[in-house]
Image (cartoon, rainbow, N blue to C red; front, side):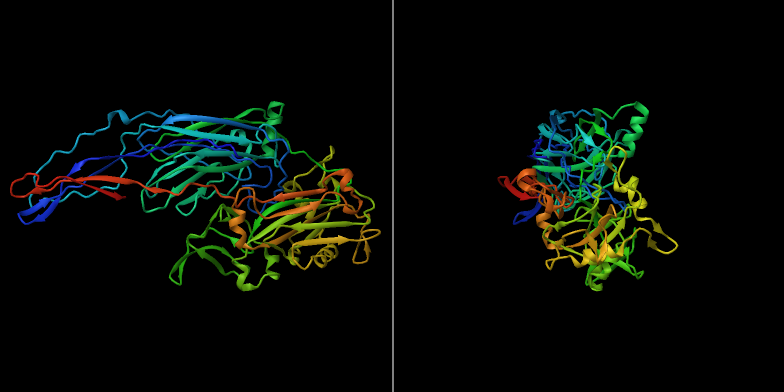
Length: 582
């Protein structure tokens, strides 16, 4: 993801002579002001890489297990040089768990050859003449520069569906001149629906609003009031393989999807789309459970206590416009400031991450006046999927990173009654998306989970350390839960939430950072670190990571002013060159 591609985009400013009215001792003079801009736009597409639960977050109420990226990092980099064209065109794009869409290849023509540099004719004006209004607009002529776009991809040549996170990194150097509501768009194709994308949109800072359709199209809309030029646009987009689509592909073609071309299309203001291709190879999900594995932790995704809903309701609170984004457990509307968040596809989008809900159990750990603003992260842990029998002399510590507090009442434990629900015949782990309902066995008639084990839940709650960031189990002899022998009970699935301290958000927005979890793989008491190496598995949620764009620079105007006498119709002074910021 460190690979960057560069697209050079330079703005050029040309002046034209204009006239206006000015009151002089000899009469009224006409002063006409005119401005003209010559622009050059860039286009780029990028790729992001990380197998860790990076830019992706879990969708809706689904529990998607995110695995660590493979050690090998395979990447491909491509660079495109283009001369931007003057007519405005647009295209769409998107990203998350895994999804994408194609865009047609197009050429970019040079429209600069017909640039008009002829000064406006000098004309006399009378008092009735209306002075010309200075224009802060971009000319649709004369784009005559080369754009360098760099697109790089990682972890795309040997992906495991629902596991490996492929990434696309896009770098545009000198990313164009933007007026209010101008848009940059990135679209990623999705052949045979093989890719899953996130519902999160990377942020480009306060000057841009972002949106995604969840299908591989990402749109960045400039909200600034000043026409500005931008440089060094960096975007990291991630995706995973769609395991169901991969299996469908194999059934149809008799082989894994191999070297499947994926198109990336980038459109910047006043420029034709730039298209680049890369290839993906995706194998079916096959996460093998390790022999004697005691624990396997992973990220499920961001949560809110309330239920996100699509609504157009607004209200004014302390002079601030707020929008309705959800309903709490008491049926009351949940509002946030207009620019804070929104609801898309039944997910609440804030700080570039998608939150699903409701997570009502967290309400027992969070004061009522903080529940609507609480942001949570949910984790899952596979317990004894390695089939230890008996489980004894247990020493195991679950750690969450700084900025998180484990919420005791969100701890849920479910006994795995049928081993086939968690492992396939070849020993590979079943995706939690496919196995969750079978493991938990929810009974709608009673509103309870048949396989829930409250006794085990109590043990874990009592094992939370005072710092709220660790759960430690330290026993000698057969594994017991509140004096009951659990050493031969087999496998369990554990889930819990943490409350996020959003003051850590600036750190989590740095690439590669985020809230996370670390668990031991094998019983720590039986693990000889020196002889056997690392015994921990870590997952970092990087969905808060931001894209970046360098601060914009106001576009300058050169204005030549002439003063014309109303009596003689002749120029009465030497032109004055004015410089202003648009």
